[in-house]
Length: 221
Ligand code: DX5
Ligand code: ZN
Image (cartoon, rainbow, N blue to C red; front, side, top):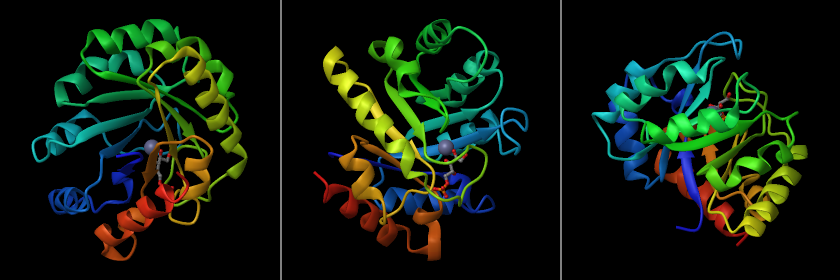
């Protein structure tokens, strides 16, 4: 699969999670993207490890957990125990990124670091060799359903160039306002993992929606 689709469950029906898990599995998605918000790093509260644990019991899909939280160091073990595959925390948190990456690896999860729209791609360069995934936010984190910010795309190209130079295998993911209308542009810029919340669940045709996003993205390769 040359590109990966990662539905954000922020747009799922929280009273029907098992149904929505089946729907994305049937649609052939690659990851499930789970947005954890603490009401402090971002002005919204979503859910924590207990919900990741509940979802884990119903799927073998790769769980990409995006932590919009101020203190990622304190929650590495709870999310590892819950069955998270990727612990994807923000570059903008306090603390030493290299240390955090080492702690996530030691807990047996893959490691991702996310950059907000105002954070440069270069801040991740020193860590790329140790990172499984770099996530570029294309909205301000905190809410689903916002408008895509095309001005972040040069960061994907910059990251891709450095990943190639280092001969690293870091995946480049994008999150916020992604759908069939911009999937080709983000793939052309170097992104290979597309998070899609609203555009996945819109209208209830998850399989059709995922296919439209995937086909649009693949058209750029
Ligand atoms: C926003 C979250 C996103 C969000 C994306 O802070 O990180 O994952 O759910 O939603 P859409 O795809 O609707 O912009
Ligand atoms: Zn997210």
